[in-house]
Image (cartoon, rainbow, N blue to C red):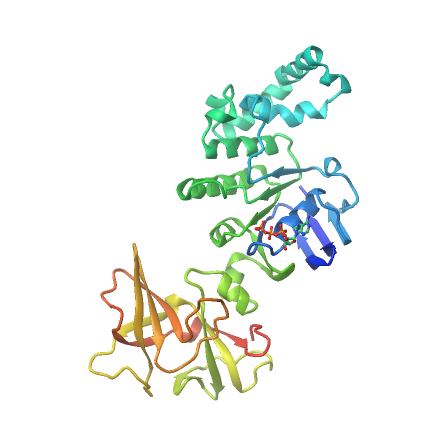
Length: 391
Ligand code: ATP
């Protein structure tokens, strides 16, 4: 097992800065998820760890040893790719045994007949057989050892790829979107499989994904990246409940956290013309009194029909009009256009003034219905309007 430390690691491709200047410490046995949108640099960071990409500057240490100048083979890390990368002409057994065969590689293995015999001998040696069979048992591949990759399903192939990584018993497992080629059901089964694998083999895992559900369910800690910069490094819970900035707030959660322009007043938070009681004074002076962004999760809001009242500016509470209702099994997601108040969502396609509310069960509300909104501000977070950082 090994800890991983990155000191001021940067990667430039000509003028393009893929990784800006990253400092990171991953503890022994951790499951680190590198999460972020396409192009944020997560694969580049993983490839630098593996030695498949050079670093432009900075240092990488694994288990206290500097590795950034070492070739991939000297780093004691196993890499699992999105595209399985199995050898199609080899059985599952040979695919899994392959790293062990290569450990004993001699130049004359290239000579067809002699090389073939030598490889088979290593594959059939008791130590290699035992290890391959033990690995196959762990991954429920025992019945498939003599089959070829083309006869396996995507999930089974990915398990073989995991087996080939495990058999080396590396200190560090590196995985680049290993589940992205699988269908939704298989993906969730393999998610659990990899989490269990981590529990059993106990190595340090670094896992790249753009899927927040994978990150939240598998990671012991998440590094959420954007444009080559880590936006937040923390446990899934920290990232969910205390996002470092508005970007993190909007990246995690489905639907994402609502961001609403607000003003701090003594004992109250004002949205448009409505003052909501708010006792939580912000720590630190970044916002002071005045303009802030209120971050509130869709499940901390409630909606009810605004019976007999006009959907407009109300002094007692927030009003709005339903613009969309989606029934998602056990809950309903309701989009509400605020009658008074402005949102601070930055993304393209976000409707100004529209917030999301999730409610349990089947909502009978319909587009056009006027509603009143209730807000549980006890779990709300505030962000600076200037910097976007949490206050
Ligand atoms: P994805 O999820 O789409 O794979 P990513 O977060 O893994 O994205 P990277 O592949 O690490 O992103 O790429 C980060 C940035 O560096 C991108 O803008 C990409 O275009 C750029 N980049 C990556 N490799 C090279 C290269 N060999 N030459 C030039 N630019 C590159």
